[in-house]
Image: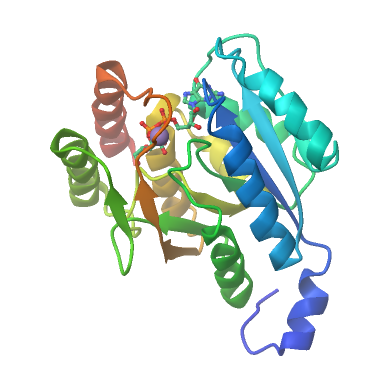
Length: 253
Ligand code: GDD
Ligand code: MN
């Protein structure tokens, strides 16, 4: 149903059963997890929306899962769900794994390393409700959005990937490789079924498929702050995968 033209009261009725499942894939995020979860809880409680946080840890050797268990004791088993996997199986499949266990009708996908600030989630929710959007994507490339702490190489990779993809595929969203997004759950499930790529490039394919399906996409400017603790898992092989997948998408969509 469309949110357009409805009053605040109507909107409240329409959204009163909404629940947000926030997926947090982790690999060696022991130092970041307590802070990110504390912030998520803070902003979700403030927004008065029902929510759950699903931590998908891939057998992190630094003991992330043990930290997650402690956090579960603090915030409760209904708020923090642990859905670990044995070993590092990649970001794309971590999302798929998480969604299977999600009880919300909306899914929020974000990084656990504090690059994505939870304060943007209520903004995404607000925009989604107002326009009844299928997807709200955080973007570093419009309005107040931006990137902080990246070196030239990393900025070049991100800008380059976005630029080439914009040029070849015209996806109708400004930040293709970003992974801070809100989806209607059924929309996300349908997109996942249609996606062929795994790993980092997954984000980009999802937005391109979304346009194919004519889903309504909105954007919220976000600031992306480079991680302070731990290191990025994006390496040369991921970049190679990205280029390969992009060419594949170019040829097939
Ligand atoms: N479970 C699981 N398994 N989690 C993973 C894995 C994995 O194999 N690999 C990475 N993660 C988790 C990290 O712990 C973190 O929470 C999140 O996924 C992102 O990983 P980073 O290693 O911090 O990624 P990044 O900072 O280099 O890349 C970010 O920015 C890119 C460009 O905008 C991510 O948001 C990418 O998705 C994005 O394309
Ligand atoms: Mn990161």
